[in-house]
Length: 67
Image (cartoon, rainbow, N blue to C red; front, side, top):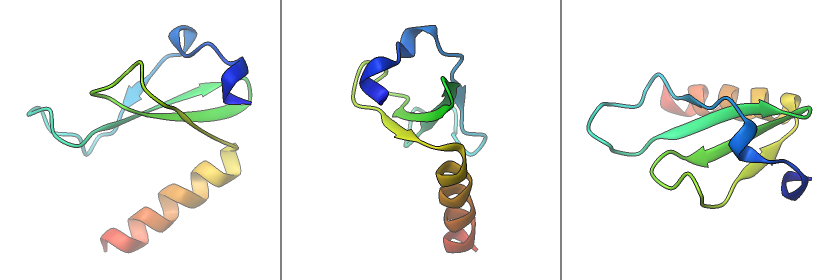
C-alpha cells in the first residue's frame, strides 16, 4: 500500500522528542488513510506504512517501554 502513496505530497511532522542535534529522529505523515513513518535523516529512504490503529498502538507501546 505504501508504494502507491507519493510521500512528497505528505505533510511530515518530526517527533517532539527529536533534538536539534540531528540524532535519532522519525517523522510521521498521514496520507490516504495510512500513517507513514520515515527516518528524518533519510527522507528518500524506506517508509513504514501503518493503519491509524496500528500507529496508535505503536506509540502507546513505545510510551510504555520508555516509562
